[in-house]
Amino acid sequence: MADAAARTETGMTAILGGEREAVLAAIEAAGLTPANDNGSGQIVAAGTTAQLAAFAENPPERARLRPLSVAGAFHTEHMAPAVERVRDAARSLATADPSVRLLSNADGAVVESGAEYLDRLVSQISSPVRWDACTDTLSDLGVTASIELTPAGTLSGLAKRALRGIEILAVKTPDDLERASALIKEHAGTPSPASSQQEG
Image (tube, rainbow, N blue to C red; front, side, top):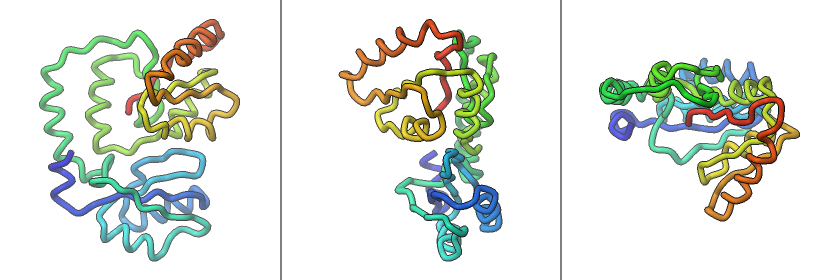
């Protein structure tokens, strides 16, 4: 991915607020990709730095733009060279079907095949992330709690806006593991499964 990012000067910009369809239309008109659709009024546009600069001069109405400090336009066509290299490496891997529900960032679908999941992970390198679709699926599944294992806590912040009424915990340090264990026990007996996971 670093090699792919080095080929063209690219970046990403978060778009906060604005009317969803108008934001998506503006992204498309600028030749950008909605690389992350996080729901709750947040979409990340990605493309060349020239495209992003032009977009910033004419932003969507009632939207705020926040350039992100990233190395490239991830989850876009600019990452295509990385896809082929990872796909070559993935061919040597053996897969097994998951024992818990796994959600795909591509569309929020529950993926039951290990082989399909691996293929989706590879394709995800150059495909937009639909976190909004993941939270819709989690809501449909009746999830009552969420535990984020990455230290940043970004997804927990998004989940608080999209999945109101559920318990949310971001595991940021080893001290949080005890609370995570307790949260799993508290929600293990609920009628709807709380063991869904999603690719990152």
